[in-house]
Image 1 (cartoon, rainbow over the protein chains, first blue to last red):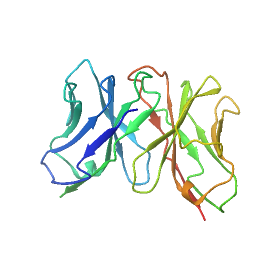
Image 2: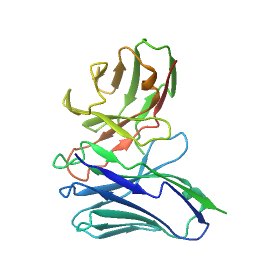
Image 3: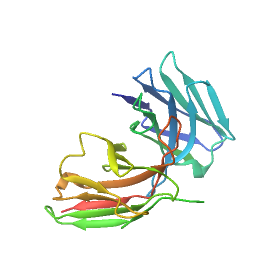
Image 4: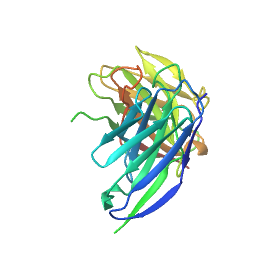
Length: 114
Length: 115
Protein backbone atom coordinates (compact mmCIF):
# COMPACT_ATOMS: atom_id res chain seq x y z
CA UNK A 1 0.00 0.00 0.00
CA UNK A 2 0.85 3.65 -0.09
CA UNK A 3 3.20 5.10 2.49
CA UNK A 4 3.40 8.87 2.89
CA UNK A 5 6.18 10.59 4.81
CA UNK A 6 5.90 14.26 5.76
CA UNK A 7 8.51 16.74 7.00
CA UNK A 8 8.97 18.74 9.09
CA UNK A 9 6.64 17.86 11.94
CA UNK A 10 6.73 21.42 13.22
CA UNK A 11 7.61 24.65 11.48
CA UNK A 12 7.77 28.20 12.80
CA UNK A 13 7.94 31.03 10.31
CA UNK A 14 8.05 34.79 10.72
CA UNK A 15 4.98 36.50 9.37
CA UNK A 16 5.55 37.48 5.77
CA UNK A 17 8.14 34.79 5.14
CA UNK A 18 7.56 31.60 3.14
CA UNK A 19 6.86 28.11 4.45
CA UNK A 20 7.61 24.85 2.68
CA UNK A 21 6.35 21.41 3.69
CA UNK A 22 7.52 18.28 1.90
CA UNK A 23 6.03 14.84 1.43
CA UNK A 24 7.29 11.68 -0.18
CA UNK A 25 5.19 8.76 -1.31
CA UNK A 26 6.00 5.17 -2.10
CA UNK A 27 3.57 4.05 -4.82
CA UNK A 28 4.71 5.26 -8.22
CA UNK A 29 1.19 4.65 -9.57
CA UNK A 30 -0.29 7.34 -7.31
CA UNK A 31 -1.60 10.21 -9.41
CA UNK A 32 -3.46 12.64 -7.17
CA UNK A 33 -2.01 14.59 -4.24
CA UNK A 34 -4.18 16.80 -2.05
CA UNK A 35 -3.13 19.04 0.81
CA UNK A 36 -5.41 19.57 3.78
CA UNK A 37 -5.37 22.26 6.47
CA UNK A 38 -6.69 21.40 9.90
CA UNK A 39 -7.43 24.16 12.35
CA UNK A 40 -7.90 23.47 16.03
CA UNK A 41 -11.11 21.56 16.71
CA UNK A 42 -12.07 21.29 13.04
CA UNK A 43 -11.93 18.69 10.31
CA UNK A 44 -9.34 18.72 7.53
CA UNK A 45 -10.16 21.15 4.75
CA UNK A 46 -8.76 20.81 1.23
CA UNK A 47 -6.60 23.80 0.31
CA UNK A 48 -4.98 22.67 -2.92
CA UNK A 49 -4.39 19.52 -4.91
CA UNK A 50 -2.36 18.42 -7.90
CA UNK A 51 -2.67 15.68 -10.45
CA UNK A 52 0.26 13.79 -11.85
CA UNK A 53 0.02 15.31 -15.31
CA UNK A 54 1.29 18.68 -14.06
CA UNK A 55 4.39 19.66 -12.13
CA UNK A 56 3.09 22.75 -10.35
CA UNK A 57 -0.17 24.37 -9.39
CA UNK A 58 -0.70 27.74 -7.78
CA UNK A 59 -3.64 29.37 -6.03
CA UNK A 60 -2.84 32.86 -4.76
CA UNK A 61 -0.31 32.46 -1.92
CA UNK A 62 -0.38 28.66 -2.01
CA UNK A 63 1.41 26.43 -4.50
CA UNK A 64 2.13 22.73 -4.79
CA UNK A 65 4.97 21.18 -6.76
CA UNK A 66 5.24 17.55 -7.79
CA UNK A 67 8.31 15.56 -8.77
CA UNK A 68 7.10 12.18 -10.00
CA UNK A 69 10.57 10.84 -10.65
CA UNK A 70 11.63 11.45 -7.07
CA UNK A 71 8.14 10.68 -5.74
CA UNK A 72 7.79 13.81 -3.68
CA UNK A 73 5.50 16.81 -3.58
CA UNK A 74 5.69 20.04 -1.63
CA UNK A 75 3.39 22.73 -0.31
CA UNK A 76 4.62 26.32 -0.56
CA UNK A 77 2.94 29.17 1.30
CA UNK A 78 4.25 32.65 0.52
CA UNK A 79 3.71 35.89 2.43
CA UNK A 80 2.53 33.94 5.45
CA UNK A 81 -0.14 35.40 7.71
CA UNK A 82 -1.21 34.53 11.28
CA UNK A 83 -4.31 32.74 9.95
CA UNK A 84 -2.04 30.28 8.17
CA UNK A 85 -1.18 28.79 11.57
CA UNK A 86 -2.63 25.26 11.55
CA UNK A 87 -1.70 21.63 11.01
CA UNK A 88 -1.16 20.72 7.38
CA UNK A 89 -1.51 17.19 6.02
CA UNK A 90 -0.47 15.84 2.67
CA UNK A 91 -2.22 12.77 1.30
CA UNK A 92 -2.06 10.32 -1.54
CA UNK A 93 -4.61 7.80 -2.78
CA UNK A 94 -4.18 4.07 -2.74
CA UNK A 95 -3.61 3.42 -6.43
CA UNK A 96 -5.18 2.13 -8.60
CA UNK A 97 -8.45 2.82 -6.78
CA UNK A 98 -8.43 6.56 -7.27
CA UNK A 99 -8.98 8.53 -4.10
CA UNK A 100 -11.25 5.99 -2.49
CA UNK A 101 -8.75 5.60 0.30
CA UNK A 102 -6.55 8.53 1.23
CA UNK A 103 -3.33 7.83 3.04
CA UNK A 104 -2.32 10.86 5.08
CA UNK A 105 1.07 12.10 6.14
CA UNK A 106 1.84 12.63 9.80
CA UNK A 107 1.12 16.35 9.65
CA UNK A 108 3.09 19.58 10.04
CA UNK A 109 2.19 22.06 12.74
CA UNK A 110 2.85 25.46 11.19
CA UNK A 111 3.13 28.45 13.50
CA UNK A 112 3.32 31.95 12.08
CA UNK A 113 5.14 34.32 14.39
CA UNK A 114 3.71 37.86 14.26
CA UNK B 1 -21.64 26.36 0.56
CA UNK B 2 -22.66 22.73 1.17
CA UNK B 3 -20.85 21.02 4.00
CA UNK B 4 -20.63 17.71 5.81
CA UNK B 5 -22.14 17.79 9.29
CA UNK B 6 -21.56 15.41 12.19
CA UNK B 7 -23.30 14.76 15.48
CA UNK B 8 -22.58 14.71 18.31
CA UNK B 9 -19.52 16.92 18.47
CA UNK B 10 -18.40 15.14 21.65
CA UNK B 11 -19.31 11.75 23.06
CA UNK B 12 -18.18 10.21 26.32
CA UNK B 13 -18.94 6.54 26.90
CA UNK B 14 -18.01 3.68 29.17
CA UNK B 15 -15.85 0.86 27.88
CA UNK B 16 -17.99 -1.91 26.44
CA UNK B 17 -20.86 0.37 25.49
CA UNK B 18 -22.14 0.84 21.97
CA UNK B 19 -21.87 4.21 20.27
CA UNK B 20 -23.33 5.53 17.04
CA UNK B 21 -21.72 8.47 15.32
CA UNK B 22 -23.83 10.29 12.80
CA UNK B 23 -22.99 12.16 9.64
CA UNK B 24 -24.95 14.01 7.01
CA UNK B 25 -22.88 14.04 3.82
CA UNK B 26 -23.20 16.69 1.13
CA UNK B 27 -26.56 16.06 -0.49
CA UNK B 28 -25.58 15.09 -4.03
CA UNK B 29 -22.53 13.06 -3.05
CA UNK B 30 -22.43 9.33 -3.62
CA UNK B 31 -19.30 8.18 -1.78
CA UNK B 32 -18.91 8.27 1.96
CA UNK B 33 -15.99 7.68 4.24
CA UNK B 34 -15.02 7.43 7.88
CA UNK B 35 -11.59 8.34 9.14
CA UNK B 36 -10.24 8.57 12.65
CA UNK B 37 -7.49 10.62 14.25
CA UNK B 38 -6.03 9.60 17.57
CA UNK B 39 -4.89 12.65 19.50
CA UNK B 40 -1.69 14.05 18.05
CA UNK B 41 -1.48 11.47 15.28
CA UNK B 42 -2.32 11.40 11.60
CA UNK B 43 -5.71 10.89 10.04
CA UNK B 44 -6.33 7.19 9.30
CA UNK B 45 -8.77 5.71 6.81
CA UNK B 46 -11.41 3.38 8.25
CA UNK B 47 -13.95 2.62 5.56
CA UNK B 48 -15.50 3.78 2.31
CA UNK B 49 -19.12 3.21 1.33
CA UNK B 50 -20.93 3.36 -1.99
CA UNK B 51 -24.25 2.13 -3.28
CA UNK B 52 -25.25 0.87 0.15
CA UNK B 53 -22.25 -1.31 0.69
CA UNK B 54 -18.69 -1.11 1.93
CA UNK B 55 -16.28 -0.65 -0.95
CA UNK B 56 -13.06 -0.73 1.03
CA UNK B 57 -12.01 -0.97 4.65
CA UNK B 58 -8.78 -0.82 6.58
CA UNK B 59 -7.40 -3.29 9.09
CA UNK B 60 -8.65 -0.97 11.84
CA UNK B 61 -12.25 -1.56 10.76
CA UNK B 62 -12.81 -4.89 12.48
CA UNK B 63 -16.01 -6.68 13.45
CA UNK B 64 -16.69 -4.14 16.18
CA UNK B 65 -17.34 -1.49 13.56
CA UNK B 66 -20.23 -1.18 11.14
CA UNK B 67 -21.59 1.49 8.85
CA UNK B 68 -25.04 2.16 7.59
CA UNK B 69 -26.97 4.59 5.48
CA UNK B 70 -30.37 4.26 7.17
CA UNK B 71 -32.09 6.84 4.99
CA UNK B 72 -31.35 9.19 2.14
CA UNK B 73 -29.35 11.65 4.18
CA UNK B 74 -27.61 10.04 7.15
CA UNK B 75 -24.48 7.92 7.26
CA UNK B 76 -23.60 6.29 10.57
CA UNK B 77 -20.64 4.57 12.18
CA UNK B 78 -21.42 2.14 14.96
CA UNK B 79 -18.90 0.76 17.42
CA UNK B 80 -20.52 -2.20 19.15
CA UNK B 81 -18.36 -2.59 22.23
CA UNK B 82 -16.04 0.33 22.72
CA UNK B 83 -12.48 -0.08 23.94
CA UNK B 84 -10.22 2.50 25.51
CA UNK B 85 -8.17 2.64 22.32
CA UNK B 86 -11.22 3.70 20.34
CA UNK B 87 -10.86 7.15 21.88
CA UNK B 88 -10.19 9.44 18.95
CA UNK B 89 -11.64 12.07 16.68
CA UNK B 90 -13.83 10.48 14.03
CA UNK B 91 -14.28 12.29 10.74
CA UNK B 92 -16.89 11.63 8.12
CA UNK B 93 -16.17 12.64 4.53
CA UNK B 94 -18.02 12.52 1.25
CA UNK B 95 -17.24 12.93 -2.42
CA UNK B 96 -19.29 13.21 -5.55
CA UNK B 97 -17.41 10.52 -7.37
CA UNK B 98 -14.53 8.19 -6.61
CA UNK B 99 -12.39 8.85 -9.62
CA UNK B 100 -8.93 10.28 -9.41
CA UNK B 101 -8.96 13.81 -8.16
CA UNK B 102 -12.42 13.77 -6.65
CA UNK B 103 -12.20 15.90 -3.56
CA UNK B 104 -13.20 14.41 -0.25
CA UNK B 105 -14.96 16.94 1.96
CA UNK B 106 -14.57 16.38 5.68
CA UNK B 107 -16.96 17.10 8.48
CA UNK B 108 -15.92 18.79 11.75
CA UNK B 109 -15.57 15.47 13.55
CA UNK B 110 -16.89 13.75 16.65
CA UNK B 111 -14.54 13.50 19.58
CA UNK B 112 -15.10 10.12 21.24
CA UNK B 113 -13.76 9.47 24.71
CA UNK B 114 -13.99 5.95 26.10
CA UNK B 115 -13.55 5.66 29.86
